[in-house]
Image (tube, rainbow, N blue to C red):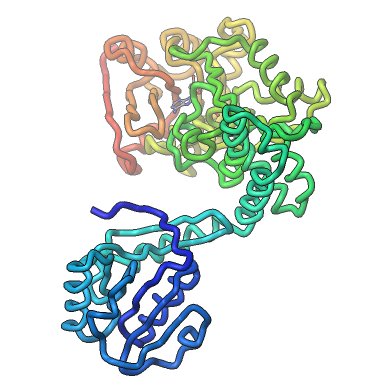
Length: 469
Ligand SMILES: C[S@@+](CC[C@H](N)C(=O)[O-])C[C@H]1O[C@@H](n2cnc3c(N)ncnc32)[C@H](O)[C@@H]1O
């Protein structure tokens, strides 16, 4: 197995056997990292690298004596026998060696690397598929842009400063962690040309300068319904810049590890297993964190403004003079039916849809007038926060005029691998749920569109049907 390791190459003597373009590329790489290269070949291709300082070219056949005192050798000829001899000779002398015609046969391989200042990102496949490594490296180039190089230089500057030298060991450790935590914000300042502000921010985070608190906009982000692919590009970008994330129970926790592992993660879920904070406590926490000048993200399941109290939180921020930004998300009200094979509108079955919360402000169910309006309203009804009151929902909708045979789907864990759909009618759905005790969260779809499922069943999920009341 190959151990990824960064080796100091400054002035290390290296041997390249071969004078082809492949040999020239390897020579270039070694020079880039400060090595001294001796190249040996009967003839050399036309390439400026052979004339560079630090390269000695010997126009002669390979000879094992050339390996004396060499740290690392690369056999890059088109003669398999010569390459094999280089490896065998190197082994006897304890010199690390590699052959370019069999990348997985030697002691090491050169991974595909991307450098941005002090940051190195490298990809390797143990020499099995170098082209794949190069492809991944090229893809990573879009993410690890020039700003990382500037961030690295600023970090180096801080570490070289007299103020940093005066810090105790423990302070330096926590300073380094803080520098990583605020990297997202520093990178976006650098990208927008605010280098001085980025420098100030990093110096304050490292603990070598008093912080000047500038309040950052709090970002309310919709995390989507559960499938980690259903977050917006902008939402993911903002998460990468977050220093504090207040997340609720419906937001997929994978996002935290993927986009902002170093940020402070605070579970403010009101769900089972969460910390059961009240909305007032969440509000206080959000204001308190924003007041520190940290980049605060409020990550909410689905869309922040779809029965998510995002509107209340935004108004609270406005009231306290804290700027905010709202990044919409894919709501479960649309995504769960879609993943269950139900189009909420369809030219053949429904030309209108209504979204309803089954929880009102004080926790009570709807008024009689509201039931009437709903039952006689849109063709398709999507009911959130109602999976535990199916008896009341079905009873009231039938009482107010919907046919008992109206198709109903209860979709639980929508868009998750464990998504389940319970299919029945207004007359049967409550009994079905009672018998199977569905998981949460779940939402209910009422209307003829539920009958489309067999023709649009695209996402694998468990189906439980029931015709008995
Ligand atoms: C407080 S509301 C938040 C809705 C969220 N803002 C949205 O846009 O999806 C919570 C309700 O959304 C529904 N819900 C959220 N995620 C769901 C999912 N993955 N599958 C089914 N229903 C879900 C359930 O009805 C749950 O009780």
